[in-house]
Amino acid sequence: MNDETTWTISRLASEFDISTRTIRFYEEKGLLAPTRTSGGHRYYTRRDRSRLKLILRGKRFGYSLEDIADMIGLATDDIDEQEQIRRTFRYAEKSLGTIRQQIEELTMFESEILEMQEKLNTRLKLLKKEGD
Image (cartoon, rainbow, N blue to C red; front, side):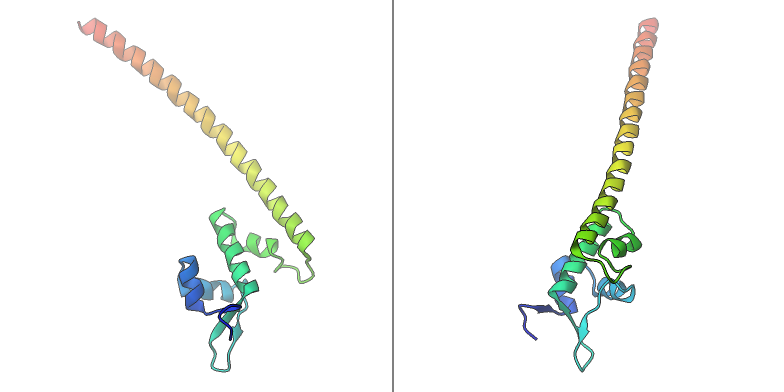
């Protein structure tokens, strides 16, 4: 096999700083399908490497393996690149909505904490004046 177009499991694991067990897990889940030599050694193609990169990116963004499988078209055999992009876009829009809601809630929480700090500081100053 040509080193330019294929990768061993250990080489991919090293490149992406993950364990070989993680890669085998993704294979067990049907997310990756490496070719095998007659001796049973796994060899990963550029497509496999790209999929692994997408899987890891999806996990980093908080998507489940089911979501990732749907985005990269594993749930449907007849998905073209345009549909894959549309699906990923829908997932991204949903995530952005969730993030925006969380930002709004955190902003409100921050305001409440600042207001509470101001009240506590005012009370502390009053208590200090009474103690003098």
